[in-house]
Length: 199
Image 1 (cartoon, helix red, strand yellow):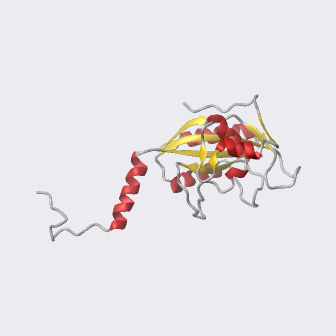
Image 2: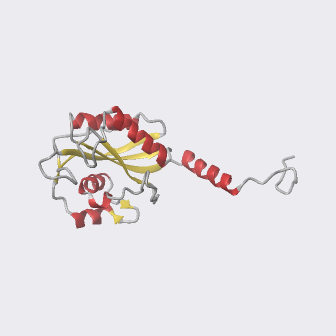
């Protein structure tokens, strides 16, 4: 016979453990949507973007569902003419990885493509940002969700809107409205370039 909580030989499970197990179960059994922003302005930018998409697709517990058109973008946060232009794209994924593990994988992909972090907004071979993870809102300094500057970046909003016109940025509203308010100065779609969706 299975013991019950009223059985004095059974110690109650701490509430914190129950919450942790429940959270893990949800994470493992129900894949969540996540939005990743990609940017590259050093080396073969298109090849690096495609390699990044492929590397993400090879991640256990992650499936790439959509890849945006490629945009060419003036560098953000630096003086004009001091860096090469960026190629940017957005990737929609479904994943069973929790946000912290998704961040670890994103950083591992950056490292594989020799990302160097010497200065803020410096030129880079690849940047992989977690823009949003389901409806999670967190001010954790290690991983703030959604990305704290996504609503200010047309190079994120425009490609995201292309692959998901009804998208919402948690806490900020419709991506379409944010993009309309921001405008698209300094970015342009590269119709001659295309990223392949991994099979």
